[in-house]
Image 1 (cartoon, rainbow, N blue to C red):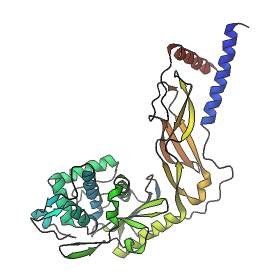
Image 2 (image 1 turned 90 degrees about the vertical axis):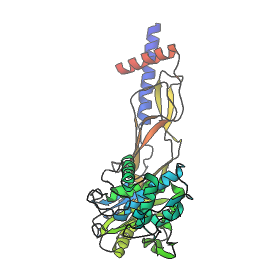
Image 3 (image 1 turned 120 degrees about the horizontal axis):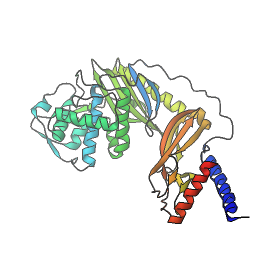
Image 4 (image 1 turned 30 degrees about the vertical axis):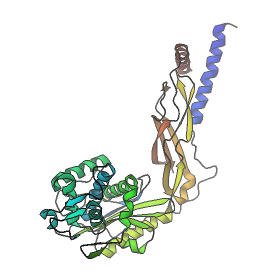
Amino acid sequence: MTLFAVNVRRWRHLVAFSSLALTLTAAPAMASDGPSPTSFVPSPPGLAATSWVLMDAKSGRVLVEHDADERVPPASLTKMMTAYIAESEIESGNMSPSDEVRISKEAWQTGGSRMFVKVNSNVPVKDLMQGIVVQSGNDATVAMAEHIAGSQSSFADLMNAHARQMGLQNTHFMNPTGLPDPEHYSSAHDMAIIARHIINDFPDHYSLYAEKYFTWNGIKQPNRNLLLWRDKSVDGLKTGHTEEAGYCLVASAQQSDTRLIAAVMGTNSEEARSQETQKLLSYGFRYFETQKVYDAGQELTKARVWGGTQDEGSFGVAKDVYLTASKQNEAGLSNRININGDLQAPIEAGQQYGTVQIVQNDEVIDEQPLVALESIEQGGLFKRLWDGLLKFVQGLF
């Protein structure tokens, strides 16, 4: 047998092996052996509100919604963004909780709910944060905005920049308080996204949102979030009310490993916003559950790498992946691994080379980057030429 015939036979063998490997790596890794159980998830409750959304705090997946992207006045829910920016300033070292903030006349005379700070007094950042979040004080909010950006209008520019960075599609801020303005609007969905950033980006500050009372200037005021008293799993976030906006509430609660965020806009009373939000959270915890799908660094597939020091690379996820899904349909979960074309060395560990889609009942419910778990250097000249020839022959067959 000639050398050429031997090499052709070897090429055919390698091509067949490569095709089989690609088929195997594309197979779902999460599918159950048995049939999926029948779903008994009822329709979500209808709420006496303008719009609402129920979100998984870990992934950001929307579980339930009604007109969640409708632009509505957010009232004092606006202060979540004000507080988020203040938390960001503290975390970056630009501001300290002990810094003294001078109270201007403009801040002191701002109407609506108040912390009752005194004009020309100095108030620590830490206390202003409690005044903003617990008491929903407009005076404290304006003082914080002036301290960070110099004026309310400049601070509003900062708020809108953060809104763009968060990907908020239906939000525009004109002031830090939420006092009415025709160009000041948001949505239930966007407010839930802000809440998720507060919870996940600055967890060391989050306990502030569960405080039930705060006393300043001899005046003790309760947190207006009634669910903090009624439901032990609720630990935040913020209420809002104006005549134009109605009564609004963004609340978060955690049971075991499941954390949900509910945003309810436009109810007709303080009691109604609490009851309607409780309905949404109760439905979520009854029928949905969070589970860890993948561990950080877990290998999900191997894939052919051309022209490298080794023929195969290991690929997976860079961080822990959690998913909140229907309890009744957990067995229906599967995955789809998508690799970005032919992989050519060098391969750098941690870089994205595809995606992992998590599928439930033929619907993609989450997508994560597929990253290289190891680096692969470029092979020598002969290895690159040989792989190039193999790749060409594979294309022929």
